[in-house]
Image (cartoon, rainbow, N blue to C red; front, side):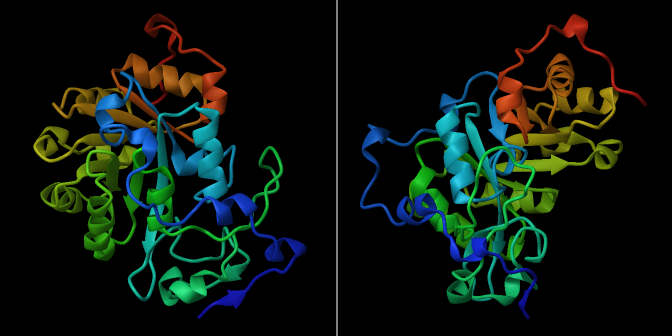
Length: 290
């Protein structure tokens, strides 16, 4: 059941960019050259715009992702995915509509037709001016950005994993999109589907995790910046090639992660971090509670 939470003039205004810059591609984009941009193109320490950079743009929105890509402060765009009642994968974080839209109710209660009536509600404290817009489908985001920039999507509903895999494969993006989960079993399944698997772990989980057990099927280990030094160090030494810290919002957090050996930064504020060059390991303050 979907309920109306709030009604303002914004509900009738849809971002022009979100409407005009989405849709299907007729063949591969011209800028691919011989093929799409893949993870092999990433710098030694990539920055990931988490949900598009949720402290700087409306999270999981087409306009936010476009702004993050245009600003160039991150080399990877991250977004979350849910599955509608009819199996359509859409870009959305929560299980319900309440927090980020003008509606209430469960995302999975809607079908694709009803999804077209949903409008995101930009937070007042975001910098800049943002309009209400429809949250995109996964297909729309893949069509807009696939092959132009590396993508990272979290599969919030593992029941939709086969559909996500089909969308990624159909566009030739199996080396251009990381598929994220908190479940090692789902990460193994992602790997078996021929996709790039990413496994995120909380600070509490990292206390007892043995990350070395996952190195045969995890391409990115996504570690909580709040974890103890010893736990982050164990993750870095696990043999998993990419160990990226989330969710970083300050230069000090970034510097600590890099000093401990993490080789990627997942951040809500890529613009802020870009204005503060990384400091050397000797100047990093250890986290409390190590």
